[in-house]
Amino acid sequence: CRMLAPVIDELAADFEGKANICKVNTDEEQDLAVKYGVRSIPTIIFMKDGEVVDTMIGASSKQALAEKLNALA
Image (tube, rainbow, N blue to C red):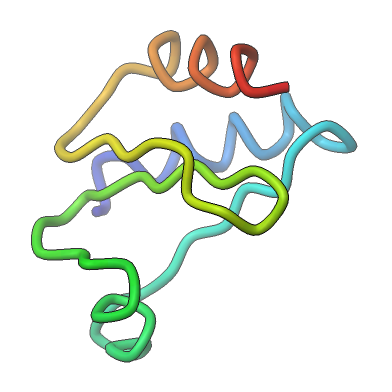
């Protein structure tokens, strides 16, 4: 999602060394989209120790995403 991309980039910088934050193009990585049940864009998947622990669907604020990341740290 182009609207959320700058927020994701900022969070990646803010959480460097604390969390791995990645963007995935689901058009190019359809297998991942199917594996994780992505049906809407944007979908934010939070993982800890390789397991999905939460999902947010739709645009979210930087603050809401940062709070979720801090809660998982």
